[in-house]
Length: 441
Image (cartoon, rainbow, N blue to C red; front, top):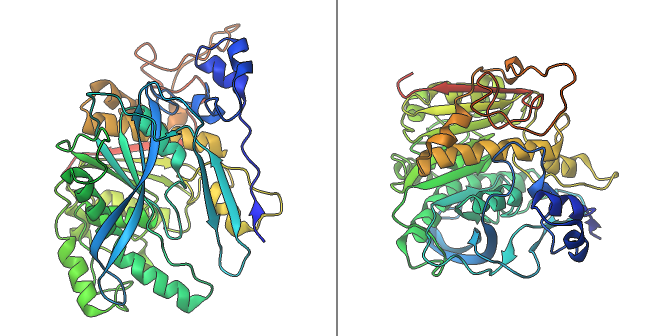
């Protein structure tokens, strides 16, 4: 029998106030019609909440004629959840459901009330950059729907792939599923990117099919994203040595260069740089040349922050790159902040929370920097780049004194606060480190 996750309550009055509605207007909104509280939270940094656009969503099926796998290439259909800017969108907001089935445990029904409105009309005459999103092992297309929806509200068409990884109950099943993921992640990303920029897929959506594309990958999706960005896999060493030789050789061939459409990449806790199962050599990583943002928790034991992610960032010498470290955070830096039953097993809790960081805050901070980075790299917004050019590497060292007797007024740091991390409220830029390297460094 499935357990059911508690639904996140929607604080309609607060959401309405954040959007400038009167209390009476808030009272007239049903919980499902109101903007979710998380999307309008005033505590979020500047770009970590809903932007100017309404959001629509729909699902598109994309056929991959020769998807790789342990049993050889075969035709497959991959569902892609699309989020896009919409104008004057009306109707009930989307409810996303997914049945999460951990090995040897009962399934858990995941439900999330979204910001987007299904099949809402896109704005006439406007086109927006495409961003492809790729989840981790055993994930699903709406695992980080909040990030996707806020991105869309800031003027992007977001394509979140549902890779449909095989479920498993034992070690042999895990090894088979993991082998397929090693072979497929970058292939899926490249194929979806090519299909959505070709013009024959997702007709009617406001995709700028000539603009550079953004790519965002979490965990095994991040592993795939490094390959899609030009980090050719070192297929003669573990973890690839157990894969069929022809499949390994094809994987190396396909990742020898970055996808031609790619303009910027975000790697969220990417798998594959940890010493015991390193998927690349330093030379392979140096072949990544697109502007990149790495986001990671300093206590991530899944992908080894100290010896894995830090190594990846330093070896990415071919690219201008940033690394945002969320101090004391673990591996889950991307998933929706969603409540779970108090008796839920640990393997479920890890999908939706962090032992140290409050989930909503984690979502807000990650979204803020992803929007800033993509706005800077894909849209050329100089104001967005200012959010990344922090005055001090350690956010705790920021200076924005509060005079005695002053009231907290919700102002965020801007030009008048040059010593503080831009976009953050006074006292709330804490627990973060930002590093930057130019290509060649």
